Image 1 (cartoon, one colour):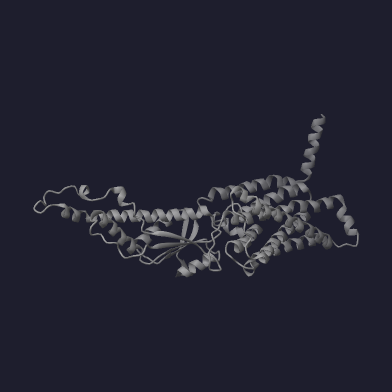
Image 2: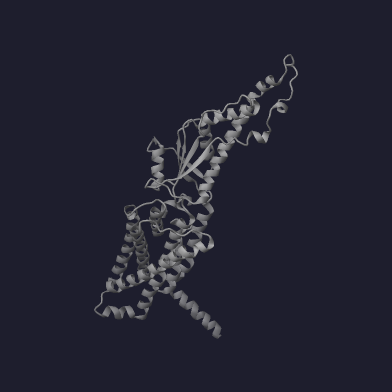
Length: 433
């Protein structure tokens, strides 16, 4: 009976906290739905690629056809009704509006055809084959430095496979077109009716025919606003993203502190004293800002001294310390504002402990921390701008990967600061009411 009474007591306490019960059931279900949708569709989401065709030949058509038939890529050839130019493609990728751009050079098809003809003649007529006077054409692929290596490798391998297939197909076609000529050259005078096997007299083998059939190379470049490129690394991409994620968990102790003071009556006693609520909250903000800065310092030291112990390169904080500090403080401002907001509107710590972590994980999921924004499903991608973690990550990426400066990160820093200040104002208005 005592056990039943204890169980009944706990259930009564839970049912009295209706908001907590709603969060207990709704938030996990919402998290499962969001994460499942993202993970299920991330491999089938089509990445938008700026496609610049300066060739217009059969190779360009085959590349375009193959990429269009793939569900992973969506080609953008015109903007505002005009064809995309190479300079425009580089600029748009450098600005972050697009993450990929493919530029096919002029005369790509013609050069591949000439080299295919040369290779076929070289194998059938080694004494007469002359190397064509054409440079090895290069397909330029511009990448946003924020694009992860796996996505770069996927696009690169797709292009390589298409080009290799075209080169082999064209070489075989040229080879068999020259076979009658080889047969005639192989027959002695007066014995045209006796046709020896041309394959036995041709100095080649089928595998040998394709050993040097790579006529085109793919040149990967990283577009940046400053006009020079940097090789992005997983360290530069992951440390800022997960640092922001960690900083936002300051929400839990901050909101819990507010709820504890309110439920214990401490907040009422403070307000009776000649101290404004604004002063009380300003003290909390300052204290938790210092805690967040300490948290960042620990992460930074770990990325400098612990990661190299495992064979990973050190994290590079860039050459713009002032801009870096501005983004960091803006992220902390947004996290603290969110913590004060939740501490004001949630009645119990249980509500905060359920709502805050789940909401942060959801914000990280749609904001590009768990999965890159360009890989998100099409219907979720526009929602990424609603996530403060997206703005924080974008600000750090502008600095560390795109070589931006203080002015380039002002939009992101402004959005983060505005988010935090707005939530603080709403919380203050609620307490005054």
